[in-house]
Image 1 (cartoon, rainbow, N blue to C red):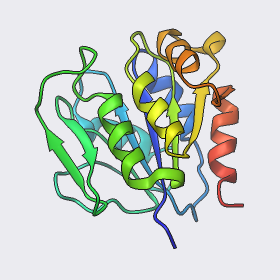
Image 2: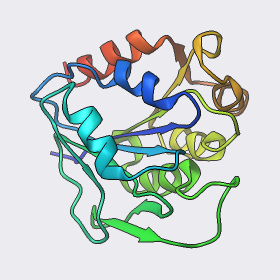
Image 3: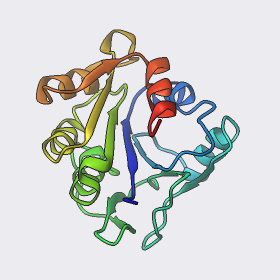
Length: 186
């Protein structure tokens, strides 16, 4: 069985959007969920917020840690998060990408190279174009691409940039993204 992952990129308005997307996810999911969110925070705080809305293990990703299915990971503040060929995390403090560290593009590009068509890339609300290039790479390597409907986004810049770059992305509402994730593997 191939390993599978969902990568999510989000920025301004992200906490509320993620509360809808991650709410009551199905327990027997065979995907890891890996999230980059642009906010100044401590990842453990995010793990506490999102651990209360579902029954998954929710944690901050650690350098050299194996990526495990049925776990929700958040990129640590001020570190780029990548996936290595051996399905482990790599953290770095390289230059910011699109004024961001962690960068959605960094995560999505590395995940696309490793998971290829076993990857789902999701772009949610945000006020810059981070994720546009990474989601395009997910698409090029056969992954599924989902973008939050810009009309309901707190900030529509990230979703609009992704839609402009990725021809075959599905544009859907937050509640439908939750449903889509829950139906994966059915």
